[in-house]
Length: 250
Length: 187
Image 1 (cartoon, rainbow over the protein chains, first blue to last red):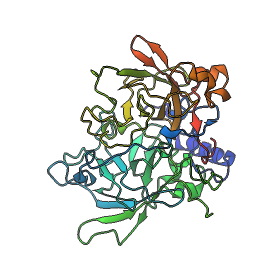
Image 2: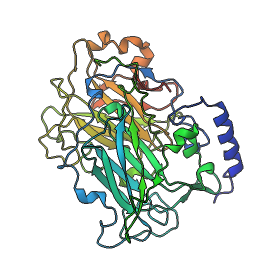
Image 3: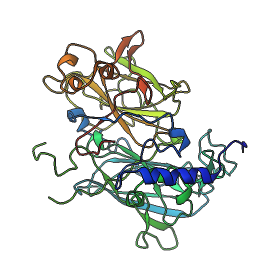
Image 4: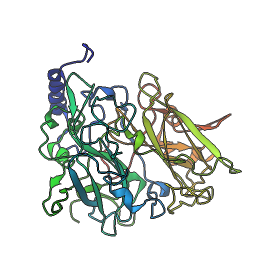
């Protein structure tokens, strides 16, 4: 590691300071959460402008069975052999802000393998690649908004935000709602991860209850006998119609 | 009316989306040989004016007649269906491009635009913006009317030899105007 990386203590102090400055209850990450060093030149300094969404923004792209093969939802069968690690099922519902299911919509995931290594040439972490695991999956939600993946529980991995920086284990999720305005990319975490407190990306969400919404729940009813552990994680996508202040005829 | 459900927070797309999200012909809303195709292209810049080589843009648009397609087929394009949606990652120079057709306006009095959402390593949440086609309609568009001249300039595509140029400045003196929608907290 280069000697000039800052210690965890500097990052942790900055996380504490940024949390103290934050608006209570902010549901989204603070874009200028500079304890995540890569954010410093990549966040807008001006407030976004309010726009009335136009028709094109009120219509999410549509995906269907011509786009996604059902086999893409199982990341453990993609390369002709069984990947190493804890086989796990991750499932949940995609809802809008009014609790309506987002049905027949695309969900995409990508993740590191059990050793914490991505199939990406930019990942230089000296951990093993798994010839039987790409870490990429897709599915469509069903009529009630349910998605379901079978995968391998990812490992935590080091990165160079600061010295001895480790990302909590996570699965990247790409989500579409019923409107383009609901487009969301986020990360799902696993409960009880000891790295949460040290991670400036997770902590960029300054409200604890909002952070909790990215953490899946172990669900014994999802676990499968002699086969896989199970986690449940629901998603709420809000857009232009997710407020009681919205006109009924909008 | 019941309280709306609390939204799921976003997180950065991170550095490693390249093996998960881009896909073949994701940026080709129409085949390049299509007669009236245009290339919407540009560079994503950071606050120092440096290129952002690990950004991802998605495009949503109307057809030339102003209708908004609601059809599947974006992930496995068959070359005939116009889905009005595409995805492009930036290259090592921060450049992106879409091959598409110019959208028509979706309502009377509003100017035609490409709706864009931007993700990047280092960017902790999504950013929505609009790339407007230049023309007389931009003078009467109700949203553009709320902006200063400098702000408007950041949202207008510029015709050039390669098609239609639309650069995205995440930060800095030429920072792009990003939009939020009613029902979402300003941030």
